[in-house]
Amino acid sequence: MNLDCLTRKRIWEVDCLSVDASIAASFDWRDLVNLLQSAGHRFDFDMPEALLEMEVQNLIHRYCHSENAVSLRVESLLNQWHGETIRELTEMSVDEICHFVMHLDCSRNLNLEAFFWALGSDDRDRLDCVRRRLHQHVQIFLIRNHVKSSEGREV
Image (cartoon, rainbow, N blue to C red):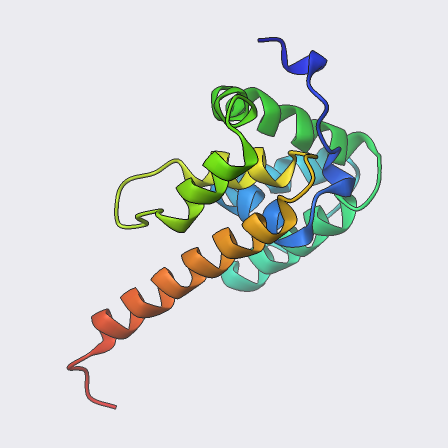
């Protein structure tokens, strides 16, 4: 199936949670630095890495709110990398997608970054609620895993 024939949301139309999740999971933030540098941004590489990473993610997020060379490149790469998942999701009904999300097992090695992008950029009606459920489900899983891994530590 040719992805160009599918009606998809453009990256600036995708909800923020889906954009952020798919970008953060799909890209190494250092690759995003290179992309931003090619767009003319300069970075202070003496700052702590965690702060630099947050700055980069914030800049990419802002770019993705409009049509520009950076957002088009990010969108193109996400479509290229996650094309198979986009095709699979496109062949599923909204009810099938909902069932999949409701029974998602985050402990399995899933390609969640692809699913975040494929679902986030799908323009079918009735998927907004399913997208929110996906993000909630993953967040709950991460919080519960963090609590389990923190048990037994002294505070």
